[in-house]
Amino acid sequence: MSDSIPAGAARPADVAATVRAFLAEAVGDAPEPDEDMFARGTVTSLFALQLIAFVENTFGIEVEPEDLDFANFRTVNAVTAFVGGKRAATSRG
Image (cartoon, rainbow, N blue to C red; front, top):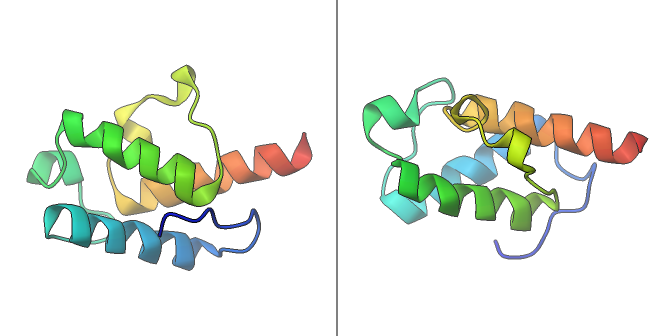
């Protein structure tokens, strides 16, 4: 999964599945799409940095300092929405 997925090539369901697969491999558990990964203990603040790097490398987006909000990475669905929003912004501008 180290290759970047071209913008527009992945539907939200594909993004979510890719994130869940990464979590399953990295921490041995794939949370449900709306499950709070931090509250559950699946993801720590330190692991969040690995998740951010994964998102940037896999989906070809850049996480800006203003994007560093736990809300963007708290659930699989939040990550999926974040990726979709960044890709949309990139394709517009």
